[in-house]
Image (cartoon, rainbow, N blue to C red; front, side):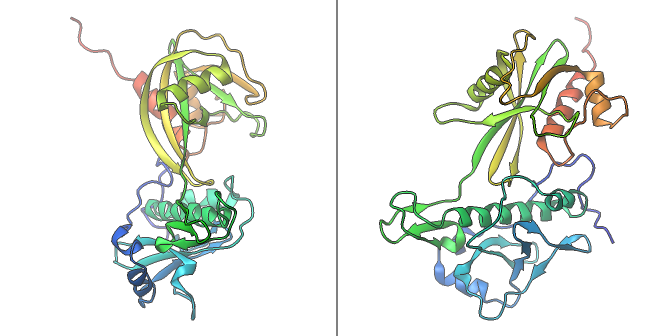
Length: 306
């Protein structure tokens, strides 16, 4: 039977994790090894980096005979106080974009299991890409129950990275700016996005990205929400800024096309109406929720007259 906790049509993906991340165990190799050896310990099953599911849930396996704690990452304790690990891999293929299988879990799994999968995926991918020290090039070893890697040659310690990405709407005169990349399916549009660079605030990154990609100057940037995006390790920081004008000058190496869409058009796209001016991002993506947040703001009735 399909679990009633699976993602609803409008629920954000990869959020709502329930694990106790047990930092006090991570930092004690003896405790981590004892935890791994417990009979109730479970391993998140992965097919490469894709989720393995059955009957509406992630497949969770017992530790294989002879398996070692140091070859796994301790994700935490679940609601039943079971230790949950993921097995590390020396190599993984791809991993920088969602696959058909990883997208499908949006309608298959409870939300907290999607968050668990996202955590496991990001960490397994990070370990596979950081087997050598970025300081001296020597091999590194997993430490802290998989939450860091250490280089024995130069004693450098490396931690899982999270890459902040600004994803944003510019609004002007009751419309929002939407764009599409060259590789996207026909008629698919979304919010603009770009990595936050060293030395800038979230607000500055939003303004810079919109200016670079669309030639639009924005002000009054406001934060809306965030989302972990494990492809491979982003944190999407969703914002809205107010545009000074609506003239567009596109960076055509980044953006194939962009346009200003009014509330009726956004509403039609979110409802998947046949005549909608664009195809909206899927429910698990923060861009869709950003559009819905903006649309809800357009529907607020005016206050009482002074």
